[in-house]
Amino acid sequence: MSKGRITRREFLQSVGLGAATIWAGAFSGCASASKAQAASGVKPNIIFILADDLGYGDLGCYGQKEIQTPNLDRLAANGIRFTDHYAGSTVCAPSRCVLMTGLHSGHAYIRGNTRNPIRPQDRTVAEVLKAAGYTTGLIGKWGLGENDSTGIPNRKGFDYFFGYESQVHAHNYYTEFLWQNREKVPLKNIVERPSPTYAEGLGGVSSNKVEYSADLFADESLQFVEINRKKPFFLYLTYTIPHANNEAGNQGMEVPDLGIYADKPWPAPQKGHAAMITRMDSHIGRLIDKLAEFKIADRTLVLFSSDNGPHKEGGFNPDFNDSNGPLRGIKRDMYDGGIRVPLIACWPGTITAGQTTAHISAFWDFLPTACDVAGVPTPEGLDGISYLPTLLGKPDQQRQHEYLYWEFFERGFDQAVRMGQWKALRIGVGGPIQLYNLLTDIGETKNIAADHPDIVAKIEMILKTARTESELWKIPEPSATKPKPKPKSQKPTTN
Image 1 (cartoon, rainbow, N blue to C red):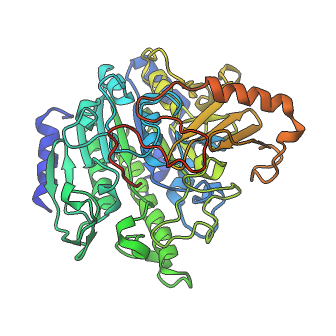
Image 2: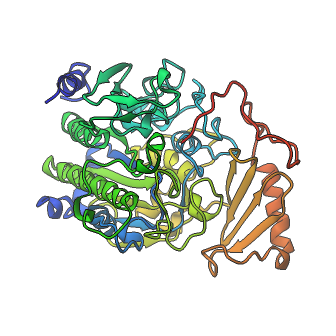
């Protein structure tokens, strides 16, 4: 056991963060147990697990045929699966900003991939839950502040942080160090071929590949739950799987072994991608087992999602195993393949098993949902709507969005709207509005804008009014010759 890992455990205890066959027990809770819990006034635990660049079609419970995800499939079978849930954006940083702040990308501070940190006034779900008496932990990738900035996790409501501060650093699964709160924890990996940004502690490719960060995150999550099991906690567990190590070129799907995919007649990146997802799935199974072992499964809401659609990086081809399922587009696209993502929720004894819902929801709904679960007031001025009624099987009490809105600056200025069955997008400033009926055309193959001028007129108004001006990101002039906009003081990065 490395010195770093012992130190992390001792640290958790010293600052007062808490004094496979188990699957059946984890999901055998009854309604009476939850009623007793509610009567006792014990606040439920909340675990939000976030994958990185996992496609809508990458899980068995969402139609995947080749990649094995038995634990997540079981989680869905014993809870509720959302079919129409959306990420905050089509790339990492803005999507995570939306998830944490409850504001869609027309109002959130971070609207594109950037190393600018979120600000003190950008209140996060961790800050809200911490004020409500929760112990809060972030394990994995953050991406919203680094290097002692205003946005580092410990300044945004997290009692404990272990992982990557920055997005580019998170590319490397075999990094030389990870952050424990505001200190670096050295690992046994050696980075010999660094990226151009490695002088700032970012990126790189390891030559010896000893300690795999996703495995460390899994162990750390079990430790966090064990130490904090006797009081309410919020765990934000953010795996980097199956994001590519962009600095590794076509060898970017880094994983310790290929497991059950080693003998598949597939290209190496496809084997690596599948092995990464199945490895993460096994880690999640261990976490669910731990909840059952400590007899806290029935007072723990577990949610699982992805920050955006599948990538086409590190040698990986998203079409090979149909990572976006029936959807059009991938990461960086405003079509649903770039922004529609899995959402699974399980809470034994509270959420009825075996449900599927078409409730239209998005990342900005998580903060108000967490407030409702914790029994605390929701901050004013959010774009989100709690989906707790849907979790509780009370659709008649579920408020609905008038619309969902996104904007994205990385390739100019793109916008998208989901309004009931209608999905609209505009690519580039001044571009024509595309309109699709998702009930009959989930793959967004037939643009029917010309057939529905009334709907297009409504969308046009939403595109103008759903947003506020951003101090970081400015809408470019409608000219094909103008360079792509960059936010003020932005240090360019990739995701």
